[in-house]
Image 1 (cartoon, rainbow, N blue to C red):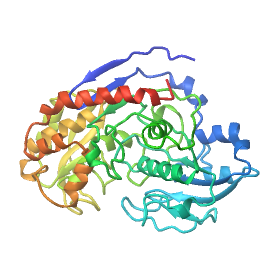
Image 2: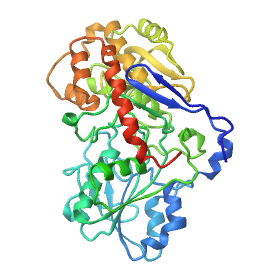
Image 3: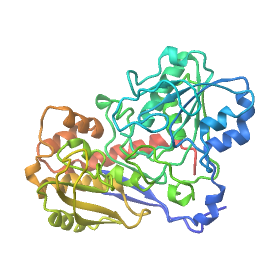
Image 4: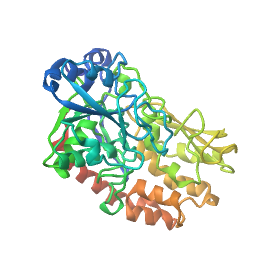
Length: 417
């Protein structure tokens, strides 16, 4: 089947590049889209017979009926599920962001759990001992500093050394896989929250990410991607008709992926609250004493496509400025097919310091908060420009060229049209 109409267009505004498609008739496509786990159970179950299997997953590892991947694989005849691996937030999602995952046994399946977000971020030789295959099944959000792809990358690297195969049960990129933007991570800034040299928003499914990592970091790994059936670029998660299972406490809806791309790194500054600790995580941004009316007017004057800004006051129950009234803005996305999250992010970096200079957001300083922001942004010249109160727009052409280079590099790893 073909979409009724398909238009590609390219927009440049310095920090971002977006290739977008006109909306599909999703009523035609949604019923045909299957997650990788369903394709595995339907078409590849016999290939797991006699194998000793580990599963790296979290609450999002489910089929369309919300049955757990853990249960589905354990029910396959002749398949021996040996252990589970826990990413950030844990196998069942019970751990707060940044909290060490201290799990030893899954209360539901009874399987032992090896934590990859506790003492170790990489699976040890002992954790991989006795395994033939590790299955990876996690719904991601498509933003570089979200840590699940980092855990996948580390798993691939250690499995290559141990001679263990990795199968990625693919899932959709919730923003549609067409949006690519933000600074490209530099080698010198690589950390667990920026594990590979990609832009902030890279527009790839977990399976496509894994293909890239195999080619660029783990060439001897036995990798297999079990692809989605029926998913096409330009289909966001809302087009699928699937139930959204939160991958972490602060991504309650599929739309939050867009907002996380817009404000997630700004939340690492410490001088702003980005809605964490309120019912609208990443949809608000502010601090005590900020002129929200002026900030909303300045952002609306830019006439950014698909988005509107409204002055708002909110009081976080936890996180930055806990219990204090914060003034700022709420971000309202009017059209998900037109909005570019990284363009908004870039303009916020430019506008907020002008409206609220008292915050000194990007001043050079030592300490964990600034280090986390630096690790999240991952671009030395942009960070220096921000810290020196310069205009980030002066970096636009260089950043645009980096995105174009990444798009060329990315093309050979894409699975879906």
